[in-house]
Structures are given as C-alpha cells and as structure tokens.
Image 1: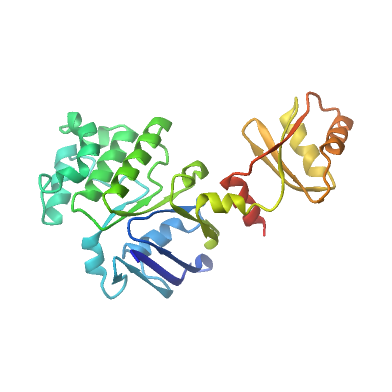
Image 2 (image 1 turned 30 degrees about the vertical axis):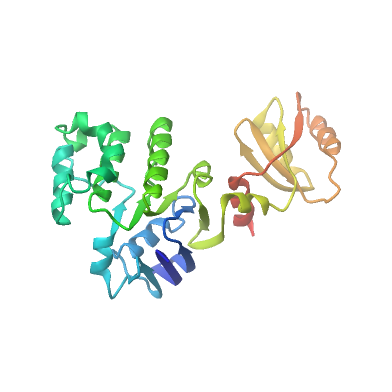
Length: 301
C-alpha cells in the first residue's frame, strides 16, 4: 500500500482531533478525504507528512513508518498545504529552483513531470509569488511539490478560495499526474470534487463515517429523497422542519432536499400540508441522492 493508517488518535488538550482513524490507499490511487473545516483533515495530513506525531496508532507512507523513518518519507512525498506557503518575495522561477535544490535535483531533470502545469505559469516566471492570482499560486505550489518526482502527493484543500475554472483545471491536472503513477491523497470540503476521486473517506469530528467509491456511497443512501420548492424558501424550510413526519430537511441550491420517516410516504400529503401553511407554487419531485446527502445522513447518526 502507498499509505496505510491504523487506529490513529490525536488530541489537542480536550479536543479529540482524530479518533481511531484507519484506511489504506493503493498505489496510483486518487483518494479523497472529504469533510468540513474542523473535521481533522489537516491534522491527519500533518501526521502522514511527519510534521506531527499521533498520540496512538501507526501509519506508513511509501512503505516507511511515519515516526521511525520520517527522513525517507520526506524525500518520497510532495506536500501542498492548505495555506499558500511558498516564499512570496521570490519569483516563480526562484521558488521552483529553491525547492529543486533542497531535494538535490533540477527543474530540467523532472521537467516532463511538471511541464503541463509549469507552461501555464512560465510567462510569469519573473513575477514574485506574492503577486500571483489564486489559480497561479496553486499551480506554482503544485509544481514545487512535484519537482523531486514524489511517489505520493498530499494536497490539503488545494482548491479552497480558487475560482471555478481554476478548480476544474486543477482536477484535470491531478488526473494526468495519476496517469504517471503518482499516488494522490487530496482533502476537500467540496462535495462535488468527491465524485472525481477513485475512492473517498467521509470524515466528521475526527471520525471516518464511511469509505468507498463515490458511486457506492451514493447507492447506500437509505431513503427516497425529494426536491421540494415553493414561493418562499425560508417559510418552506420552517414548515418542513415542523412537519411531524420529516426525517431530514436540507437546503440544496434552489430546492430543499426532503426525506420522510414513513415507508409509505405520499407526496400529495406533503403538498396538502404545505398548502395549509399558505405556500404557493409548490413542486415536489423525487431526485437522486448526492454525496452531500449521504454525508449529512451519516453525520446525523
């Protein structure tokens, strides 16, 4: 396995950041750690990249123990932290040369690995890193994480605060890197990005809720789910929350996602109830669950 995590626990005083975390990532896999801020994603990344020691449990990366063989891991992995951490006063080219030198290599030696990414920022190679746009900073950070040809790549919320076009481009770059045999562990709070991974682990409050392929996780959703819409969203949510048979009520774009506690749910009954609350233009239609729906359901239990 490229990454093996077994019963990892980590606490900060009274806060349990990670609770009995176990999973494995296969060689060449694009594995996603999906969860909101505060779920424990960054703490886990810091343990796996040897920047933090777990209170309990064991982990290996690229076949090396994260505690006893940390030097081997640091030479074998690329790490892109959530916060832009390159030298803002150095130019694009100076940053890249600096990281290549640290690992005893050169830009030229591994240029084929970063070529697809670097050609997009090469026109700005003399610009200071601090003056780059969010998307360009992201590409530079990824280039620096790859310059020594790592076996495993850790990306901690790499698309947070980046525009949608740059997000899409970034995931296309990850797919191309995966084709070159690099194992990728990426964390994100964006549920739509989860579908782009081979497998995902849903994490909340330091606990893993479920691990599987995105398709299988969605299939496990236990109840029929409905899109509900009316003329007043605020009033609609309040009315659904006070409906005696509701199981879950979540805003979802222009709709509310609704599930019912009964096995013999009839949408016409719900429509009549909403009409009694003076709501107009009511629409109720069955829909397919998403990873976000599954996450919310698992987080309730």
